[in-house]
Length: 505
Image (cartoon, rainbow, N blue to C red):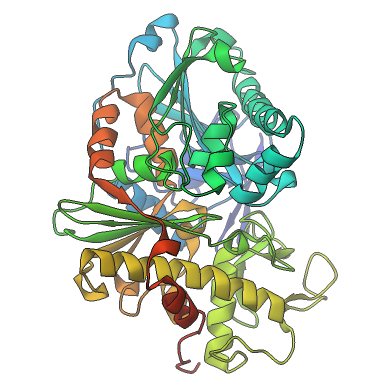
């Protein structure tokens, strides 16, 4: 019988299970729990677990046919999955005409992030989410943020074609993985929906992104685009529908429009903030009649870039830190670096412990993990340069929040909830975010992490044509403006560079 190795809460258990057992059943029958709000029917996709050497899988659809090593979500991660399910919009299954192109139709929802690409494979006859896969955006080698990618398109001959080809090749690689199953043919993939920021969508469609980098920041397009798969040379049914979801402006993309549209907030949340903290920090203040939006140049620090020992939320990343020896590492292995949520924790600890001044000054590198413990054989530390990168990133986000509140005539006390979206927003500890001044004082108790809402929006667009109406209603209420043109911007940014006064260990 295959051996199942289960990692949970820092402990390891080995059990033998009959071949053909569903992973969720094997885990639960051995005393562990996996969150599955749809009852294990494959519809919600919340029972994802990490399988070594394979990535994240949907456990209620994963059949054990070999030795498997699985890492169960931490309690905080399980809470995020629960919140994401609770606050996600529910629409009737209605995938549209393209589902008639095959007797066994499938769809793929894609979230094109600046750093990461997320793929969601869906059976259109039932709406079941079969598999979720994430890969690094292959364009990263040409620059960590959208401005550097745009610059590459401008300055390098055939630069746009190169970046577009990188994306198309990466998508086709994942489509090929999905059709490795003998039950799924290439022509069975009949619908693809795509979310992403405005720059990524321009590059995907081969549209010149240069106007996005210069005043007046006018996109070539913001409306929804419907294409045939053959037009993008995608390896699926050539007549299949490719739906590129609508954006609002140069820096408020489809990821934000669809992300907000994917939410179903509780009625008590009249005024709420929606923040996607990534390489580009997009912020929206949702009120009953308007949605005020802005984008901030947060930079890639919170995704590990420009930080000496920073990495993405990968296996081996320190994603929780409450002091020396009190930390968590993704994948329950030896650490190789620090991801965004871990960085926020470390800085919050340094403030509490007096290792860091409110002005950002530190006397020497702060060692997070000593060389004898790390997987690299070297100290993992935070440097003075790292602190400055974090100051710039957190000030950008905090300034965007403050100016949105001013525009709407509200204060932080008027906010009923703060929805944190995106990969980084998933795992950030709200107390640490408030401690370093990333979010206003008093809002940490109102934080609701809602996962990858851009991905959720893309999934809803695959499952139901009714999502089109929802996104257009949301889009009609959105007002976007350039932060740098606000008269309060420079002063607010300077003030928010400071860290709050420490409160002690």
